[in-house]
Length: 374
View (cartoon, rainbow, N blue to C red):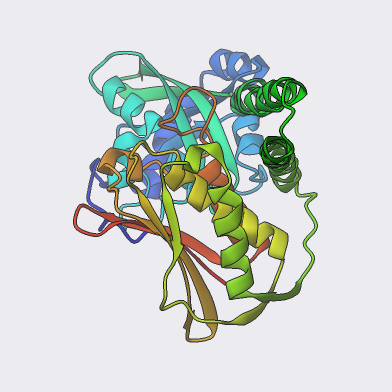
């Protein structure tokens, strides 16, 4: 799924045997008062051993992981139980990949191994492309000579979604509406028919941008609820690329950018949802436009690969490695509080709904290219 990195070991991958896990579980659970207290709290909670394996989880944790209580998660690590998208790309699983370097949960656990309580935020993307934002509290705990970590989770996904929506509606959309209002005020003072026509065009483009922002947020909201319906139609690749090029060249942010279609692009027809495909490609272009570099050249392309069609959006800028590791997570952004929906929605719409594959490649020599293959 991610082609940029060969996974490396971040945390040790040694584990206790199942018999050792059962013994540690008994040590913790035979304190009935403690267990009754834990189960009475409205707190998602799991207890880990020194190998980061689960030796106890309360009912809320099972619910949070969408796992039935009849299915044992003892011996698993937190990311494995929650089905983190990165948990199974190495033999060591959760905590042992390069992606875990930027994981708040993994870092909180490592700090607790030093005997301190650690509180961090964590963003997780699951194998089913569900995005979770979590506040984790990792606390060292010792009982009967056994050292454990009490790992408490608070789901802050709704808070992060609200922040993102507020950012969009109170910032981006307000800016678009402000542009329309300002241009309309100027229009009243103009008498030259040629200038009137020119400003009417500006207003029309600003209004279209406003509608695009609103539709994008509605689609994302429906997609996350599982309520988004797709409409498969025959789509022409040249038509899609030209639509994207014309749409984003008309935006203010692209005023000093160049958007071109690669002359090696192939003229292809495919069956897909044209609205969602344009949304995914549009987010790829918008992501490149918003990176500050006045001379950025953004290149659109489409080629046939075996039995699939591959679209791509390329620019010459390199994405720093620490940023690469967190792309596609819902709330991660380098563009200010509450942003970070663009790359996340690429993967959600492109993979869950269009049944394609979305990834990126980035290097200092070649720049950055985002792909969707359908």
